[in-house]
Length: 132
Image 1 (cartoon, rainbow, N blue to C red):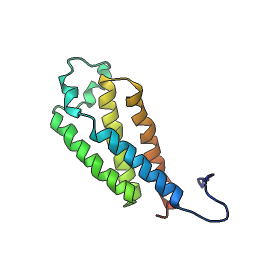
Image 2: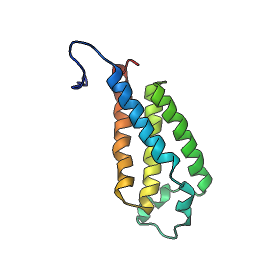
Image 3: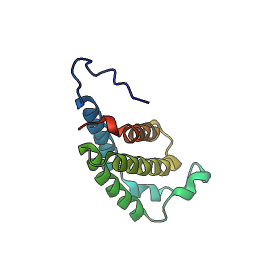
Image 4: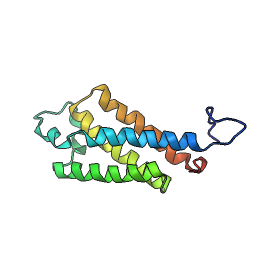
């Protein structure tokens, strides 16, 4: 099964398209993660979905440590270091942080994290086509 890149020029084989998309996706998650205050979630006295409340860590320090781990894995993903590991680790962390945020806030900004998470998984699955 081969992924077809419709943007690529059929005459010149250019790996720059996938590398640029990888950097843009990493920048998007970097931007969404750095500016969000994860400690403020613990000040909210209610949750919207009790079924997912189990996934909330008991301490805000866990969310802050998870944020820094995500930032490190996003930098590794952006530069192309061990794409399978860095993309799948980033996807798992983004998924967990998205679920924690979704328990308190169900807006479109929260659900957009899940769409990007699937893109991270696809980059991990089709890593052999990214030559940079």
